[in-house]
Image (cartoon, rainbow, N blue to C red; front, top):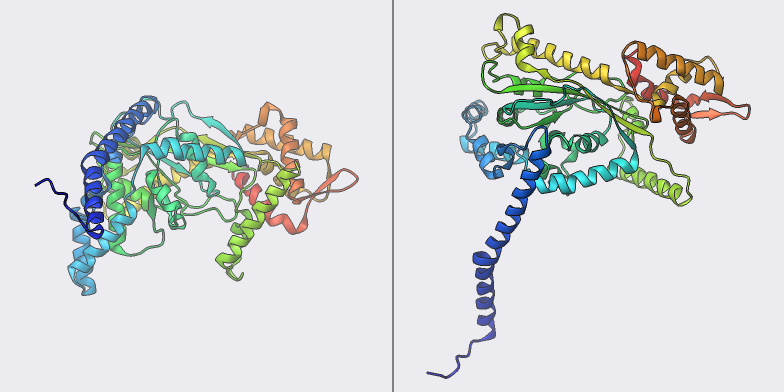
Length: 472
């Protein structure tokens, strides 16, 4: 009975592996999960105490639960049935598409990644590249927002840095759920963005099933009070001017909105501007329809070359940050109050209107929000100087240029524009803006102390002037 039992090595190894896995599965992994969840819950409690709009239970729900809720939403199922019938395909095939769209859209919010990893990355990148400033914040912004209110930050879209900049500046107020375009669906950026609560949008998809799945997810998140952020222009401004708003996300939020219910939706206009937009030349090239499309390899090679040149400037001590990046936050626009005043015979309830009637009302609301964004666009040094240089008949000396810029600033202030004057010093603002344009070789400085726009760079200078042209 005491004789040892000999087990072949080939049998011992799988037995040992199975025993180790059982130990991990039954003891170590649950303990680790409990420890991590306990720390995560403490982090969420600490964060919620300082946020103006707290993290909602919807954001903490398991992703698979949200996917199942979305897939089996009655309106989504009805849309899948109609799609299968109209296209003469099995219902199971249509539902397979629904599952794929739901997994693509539903995010995986992780508070630790958002407030520890994402916030740190956003703050570091934003401050490294720009002098980041909060220019203006309406005293009513997020002040006394009822707990059952969905807050939606509505922004103009100047650069892909907008996501980083606003996430950094808004992190003291709330955790934002972004609507992000398909450009970000690349590894590993996709996983990071999704873990920060963002959801992806196919902006040009006309698939009725996809549109219904997206609509119902936006409705679910809005109804749950999740703070969201969107760019109604539907893409980056190509020429620097504000674009007309697209109504899709506005409509998804308001289509099933009950103005007499307990939940309200408030829109926060947010306006951004930069002294330098990293993608400026690429955006301008997009306006030229006959220009050949460049390959991904060319884009990657150009980007790598640009950053190597920046590193070279750093090593030589000649590198400057890309000027100022400024964000202004406007006051709250309540959907309930706006609809009660402007929706006419519907009394603020859009649920009984057909699509054309609903879009007419939603379009007026979107225009009002975009109008407020236009009013709040920060006026920065580069935009001021480019405006004057483009209007000048010839080269200007420094004194004349400074005088014209000062007169323009006074004119814009009289019209209620939000000027950001670095350090409160207009002379410094003038010189820092002019220095950036000269260093970028967009402005030519002659030996006689005269400054003029470089003829070949006038479209690029107009891009920056257009950012504030509507304020004049």
